[in-house]
Length: 263
Image 1 (cartoon, rainbow, N blue to C red):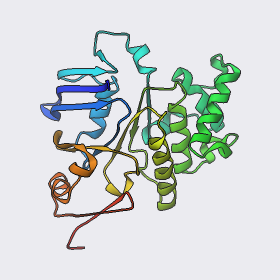
Image 2 (image 1 turned 60 degrees about the vertical axis):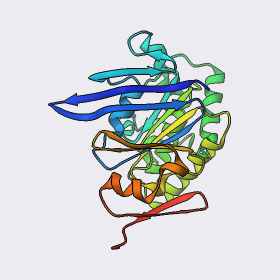
Image 3 (image 1 turned 60 degrees about the horizontal axis):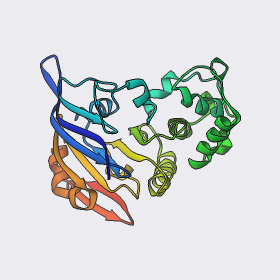
Image 4 (image 1 turned 135 degrees about the vertical axis):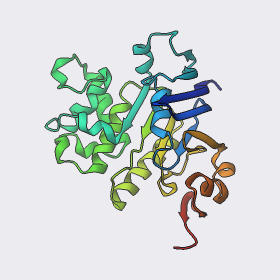
């Protein structure tokens, strides 16, 4: 098993404050990870470091076996898929979903006419939408889609280059219950696919953890509280420490639920 992410003593300091503080984290090939923590815990910052888009203040970063600064970052980024709610604002809303997906080949947010695409690229884009149960959205304009539908389109887009690593930053943020559950089901299908890349999903709700995710790292105030196999690591004790609140945790049919005893 090779390591797809290797962070060693990584810190990110801004204005004298630690956004990440001496983080060690290793993700092996084909593992499915959840990054969990409250707002401001450093989850997105850690994902930006892991994806090579943010340079840490200290520490060593290796992505897909290549140490930061010792390889062609443009080629490296083509091997990493990324999707999150923040990307939606960069999309031209008048474009149909299929065209948005195919532009993932060049990591472009422009009309497909600005790059050359072969028939097999369009076939790959259609297959990506089908993989996320979104093939029926192919001809729909992006700005007519619901938040959940947009997320599925963006995840399909992130798979265009057949990446070795997929990073999903709070993909369920802002979704209503129905849209969240449909997306969680799609992410579970992706996680259970042996041909899928290594996946890292950022969230701050245990209810959003899809079945099939086998590892978790809990962050609080930029530091790692615990990490490892999810069945061993995600407990009421670690969750309570992470969110600084007494919490109970229940697992039922591979889904989690957390609540406060005072509720």
